[in-house]
Length: 153
Image (cartoon, rainbow, N blue to C red; front, side, top):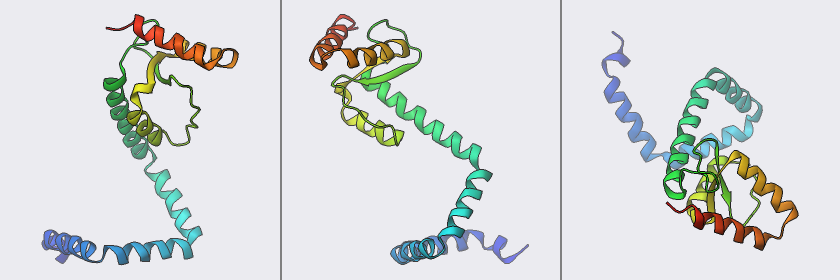
């Protein structure tokens, strides 16, 4: 048995203590390394992603599902027009256009402004966005609020 195997617990504890004590120094050193060895760093990152791609995707999907469940509990789980529970989207009533550059940030935005969102199935979400182009925004908001009132559980 090697030294590391015999003293594994102790070495892990020492490593944690070192990181806690010198965290700022370690982070600065890592940042400096990334800046000076940019190509090597990016290459290693790409290789690591390729090697662990399925694990990364599974973890992100699990996180995404958890966030969607939290949002469903806040906003609702049925399309306010037809009542279906399949292929739901969160539509912002006031029609602010948000780029979906980072879905995790979008979830955070929806979570903080959940009263401005309604659940719509894929079909009705598409129809609403079609109406946005040809309709006054205030009229569309009134229509959506009317639909919401009609479908109160």
